[in-house]
Image 1 (cartoon, rainbow, N blue to C red):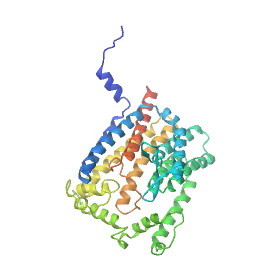
Image 2: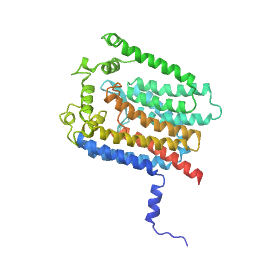
Image 3: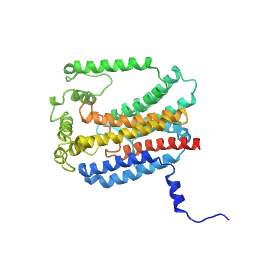
Image 4: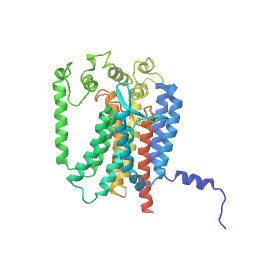
Length: 380
């Protein structure tokens, strides 16, 4: 006879089967850190952070349960829907604070550009898998076009931060697919020359009335503020100046939890979102930064391990790109709040407040777990 009795242990085992323990542990440490910092930076948002975290973890678990090939089969429709929604934003989107980034679907507003952070690496990984064994210049050109279309629509909103992240996701896939250094070096060289030119001629090109091709006026101001925030210490340079004061004043051990003066005297702007790293630095000092960086490095190492051991080309590309996206989030955020990169509105991964970003990042964790589970099943 078949045993139909209820077995809680089997139920728990089935629930935990798609979970990768090292990734879950590192994610748990980051989320715990986020709650500790948020209770100081913006205690009134802790309750909604709990809700956001629950939704993000549920999305991660659901994604981890899907086989990696099933995820890749969703790439084309997800990419197509994402592009169509971006076009709809351009035609019918709602404008707020000078940017048209949201689409009202009746019951709520959505930001379609967020879809592309996941759809882009999925799409390009799926595309290169279809062309495996015959990847050449034509394939890289097609991949570049697939990347340029949504990035151009996002830039037009304008949303430079999301455009940077989507571009990075696509470029990582293309690079891991085998793009020749002969094509990469000229682009890097042009970028380096441009940076040197901006630094060398900053006093001239930052003057009022000087237009920068391809950039809006506020984006020009962000770069010019980066070069010298003291030119407008109470205006455009205020954020960076206060942020660097907070980071520097933390010292080695910090001022103590809830003891940050820049934070609690309201000098630090957007302290619960883009500038939460400054709160962490002021209250926990260099020690707190090292702890955070250690967790990030371990997360990256685990992600690269999963990518390197993945069973197919597409899952290797996807795993590597997702891992590098985590790096890009962290690098850009820390760079902009410490004054070495322009402020572009990129959150600190898993730490900054924001439901959409947290769900997107946890979907990335779920994809890595799905890839790892596929490898384990393939070896069984």
